[in-house]
Length: 521
Image 1 (cartoon, rainbow, N blue to C red):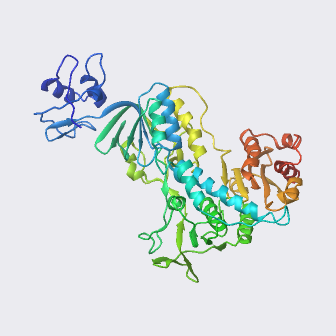
Image 2: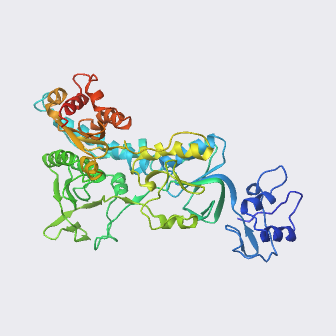
Image 3: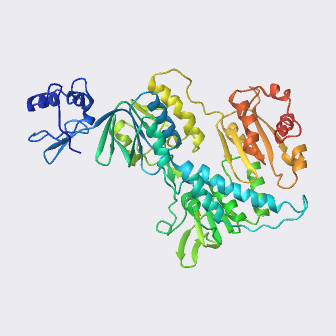
């Protein structure tokens, strides 16, 4: 991208250019030298510099190509990754008057609106409607259900993703004053980011919000096969006849249940000794029982030895059993690729699983990180929680740092599994003297009234010495909504004795919290 070098008083001569380089001027200082006095910085001025014999390595981002110099374009902040957190932060900084370059390799908005939270919840909503219709007999008359995937696929394309077109999101960001660049952003030195042939010099800082990618295990035979991740599952225009899901975590189970409710024969394979292994055992037990009642097959503690594919579909070898399915969904978590981001150029460890930050999301001098890549939970709400904290810090404004002791999470199966803070096992591992309160949702007044589809449990994990909740789990109809009261209790460290003496509306699902409190012991 050749530009003509223009100095404060006209063209910068060779001697001035060479003296600046020899003196060790930064590229930002050089950019100011090449800007007209009182005018715009160099990125507004086309330049082409010839007949200079200057080593290309003199200064990061400066170099010669065929006798011309390419310089980094100065800006206040560069945001690498424009998912929910990156977009929110970049927009806040732009509205505050900073010059902001937002870089995104795929779609502005990231995984959540195009392949994650939004379209998958549309799928789940459709599956829940089918399940509710099937619960009519014995409760409200008779029903006949005929699943059809086409309205689901159409709604995802028309209402959620604009057929995977992010122009609306791009216009929204640009309208706030930001500049959007599509491509792979990588750090190339302190304050410097490259995107293809362009380079940017960040005066105020760089924010890494690059997110994560689906993690695919090194199963023999898998790498070159046409398996699904969550992205292909969301994009499908028809429900498959059969589906094998490798991974019994939140994403795997949500999609498994959806497709099963649309008539797909589903087998879930999980290497751990239970489904949802990161959640409470009681939550796993409830979900496992419900999935079995709905006709899903689960293989727990099963290791995949090999995967093959032919015209008939996939063959998943579990050693003692061969699972065959038309489609294969790999839902075994996500990973960050720090090598590809060039983090070593700013002093960070490229071999780390995540980027470690302080409470204000600082990762290194002049570098902040937010979202999945920080390892605090691969949730949109974590990224959008971190975004304003980092923005305040970049702007030099006071405010509280990030806290994660009350991090909420929801698995949107039916029943929903909501959880906050520590599980019982995690609390005991930390040496906390634990008391547990447990109650069954069907035994609550609202659960009894609800009847069909009322599976669930409320579990409280108390620090017995401090007299506050360190964690809680809410499984049941709208378990994620019931969770809100528990999130407040854990976040604010409300004494359990105080919780025992508050009023709970009757008859509601959240009233089961009161019963669980009475069972603490």
